[in-house]
Length: 333
Length: 115
Image 1: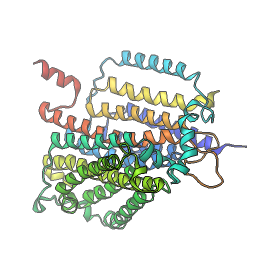
Image 2 (image 1 turned 120 degrees about the vertical axis):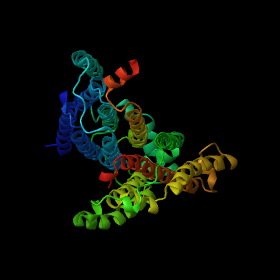
Image 3 (image 1 turned 60 degrees about the vertical axis):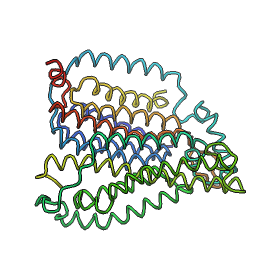
């Protein structure tokens, strides 16, 4: 019998390898960024084939969407071509080959790919799969682990994202977008096909983000995925109609407040559960019935995560584009 | 044997390609793209470790007993979003370096520093 999953696995990984090699060899940074978008899409496809649907969602929005866009707006400021000087190329190649070979030797006694009895799949993961139906009672185990069992980690990650946004804004500042009159004559919105398709897509993307946010307990989804998808819709809007128009819809002052409020909501759930007699982020005490307490806690913290992720992603994008628009007003979108 | 470890070897190859770009390339943007490839290789490694033969996505359904390991999914899902946030911070630093030095090539920055 032919194992199709295995064929997909082999082919997608080989494509990833080819794309990475092309990225490493090329000098045109614009082409490299485009290839890195393909690389992100390929890894999302790979994650789907290995059952990691929640991860694939996030990677598709981040790796194929937001990250190439950030690179592009930086390229606008730093230039498209890299200098051809290579320092210590031979020595580096030797170093990389030796390191790689040592890592390969390290894999020789690793459990086989897909082994159900591998150490990674036989300790706490089994408990999550067996007990979460009784303890938390939501079908998506990834959400149970993310929001409840490992709620501490996720809180830390929400804080990291918030801190990164604070860092980006302090480094770049948020210049106000170009005035209406200064907008360049060639605008993306003048391309009829682009405009019509985006106008149809943007409401659907926003609606889908809300679905992913509130359906994350039952299907793949949750705050992180919904946040990046929501941000992608606003970013699409701002690419089409210009930064000025986008900032009058998603006002930077409001976004800054929302980014902080999301983290605050998350932390407050922890404090409320402490005040109710439990430990930090122990949702069972939030309601008379431990299971509905868990449900309540998960919905609220996922909302906090979603709000923080969406607003930080939009803010970061605004910070970069406002700078490149200010540097090159003639090529502004 | 080869199929048992194929995923891990591809991960190592990707990781080394990223590592090589970080060491050799002088352009800071290119270094960050190399770092991005390195980072994605770690994601692929974790998800490969979590795969269980015959298992399905870890969303509980009646009648299914074998699921892939949800724990690596959780770790990587958050790592991706943290990764883009930290990448943005690095890119912001690159933009400021360009402002201060007028270049993002490592060698030229070093020459300016030595003057």
